[in-house]
Image (cartoon, rainbow, N blue to C red; front, side):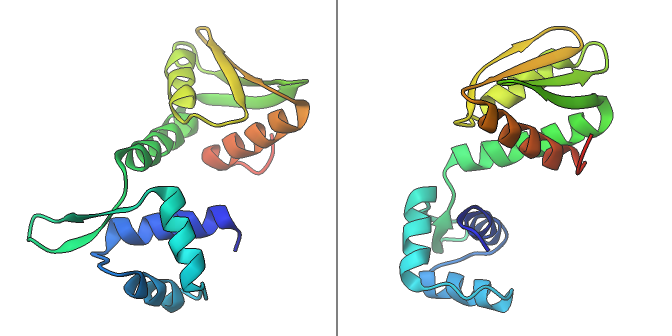
Length: 156
């Protein structure tokens, strides 16, 4: 499991469980087949910016920052949009071109920008095309791959 997958799993566990200690989190990870050291969990939690808060029932437990919640929500919205409105995703140089059904490109462009992917230099949306501007050709390929994962397609 790579760092991104591990951090996504940590976020999912914190979202779905009332985790009070790193030891509890490590046990939850272990129960799902992930053997992670306490130091790695600590670093991941710091990077994700997990913080302790009191839940409505008065128990102090770990919570995710709102930006993580918002990005997760945005990806869920994109998955819905992609499944209903995307016709194709292709790369041309440093550009990723998302072709959509008419009237959907602006909403998809807005959601793509809100993800704040470091590979994106900008987004231009029309009526049925969304142009993602990347910094390099290799980053354009990475963005295409991420988009295909959201769409649920392995290839065009």
